[in-house]
Amino acid sequence: MSPARGGRWTAADVPSQSGRTAVVTGASGGIGLETAKVLAGRGATVILAGRDINKANRVAERLRAEVGAASVRVVRLDLASLVSVREAADEIRAASPRLDLLINNAGVMTPPYQRTQDGFELTFGTNHLGHFALTGLVLDRLLAIPGSRIVTVSSIGHTGGVMHFDDLQFERGYNASHAYGQSKLANLLFTYQLQARLAAAGADAIALAAHPGIVRTDLWRTSSITERVLISPRLRVLNFWAVHSPQLGALPTLRAAVDPAARGGEYYGPSSRREYTGPPARVESHPRSHDVASQHRLWQVSEQLTGVSYNIPAPPDE
Ligand SMILES: NC(=O)c1ccc[n+]([C@@H]2O[C@H](COP(=O)([O-])OP(=O)(O)OC[C@H]3O[C@@H](n4cnc5c(N)ncnc54)[C@H](OP(=O)(O)O)[C@@H]3O)[C@@H](O)[C@H]2O)c1
Image (cartoon, rainbow, N blue to C red; front, side, top):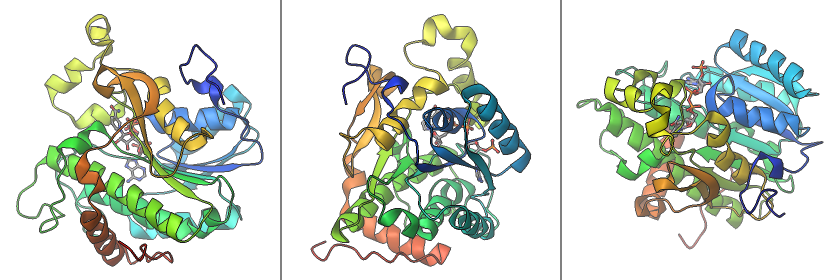
């Protein structure tokens, strides 16, 4: 596929998604909404997975009206509750015998210290453990579908992230930025290990990751005043180079999800201005995300904590 606009990959490069089914988590706002909108506009059946069912229903109505989406469904999913994740997975499985795309997009950033219903630190529980469980519970619907993909949304913030394996839930002291960095590093460790297992199992599905750069969304609502001022639309003349729109922020996710040239284990993000903004392209993640021992350790602890086991073993040579 050749990019439609002067070598820049845009939403116009998304091929027809007719006959395909996509699940997008956190699709009721921000980058998830824009991702769902483009996929629905290209003919996909889109399952909007959101924790506030009324909000998700309103978004579904908007998609039907704005892009003439033929088929939009809503599923209630609260990633901060394993009961809800299991119910959502059951609903998704009942609704669709095949899944082509699972977009693990939902997330929280730097909230005050809170725990999920299962007692996990909220950021790690939502951003990583909830998605780990959801993916495992619907994976069989993707495994044998040619061209199926699992795309997990990470962040530049992963570069400062470290896995606190001796205190994953920050019980010995909470630092919101460290918690976010850990969760976004976990998104990448998970993606690369999932890809290794899918490849070893000879599955048709592949796993990729993406990050949106810096995007003006509600995610920043719990950030410091300084950060909120820095991304403010009022400062657009100054911050335009470093902050972009949800529409542009969705492009790396979309490229990872649909570009026929993309391969399992790749990571997509904005390609210029320190990866804050710019056209979506393949980018590199921090070497810590490729540490296979950390990938195994995270996988094991995630299976223990969520009670969700995957039916695809690690490659024998790892
Ligand atoms: N914005 C950025 O600059 C930026 C930078 C790097 C990475 N990212 C990543 O991009 C992804 C999307 O973020 P965004 O910027 O679009 O933020 P956003 O506008 O705040 O959207 C986040 C979405 O996640 C949902 N969500 C939060 N907690 C949830 C839970 N427990 N269960 C289910 N859904 C939940 C939210 O639902 P509600 O609508 O109910 O709140 C919302 O739909 C996140 O993974 C984030 O880490 C964003």
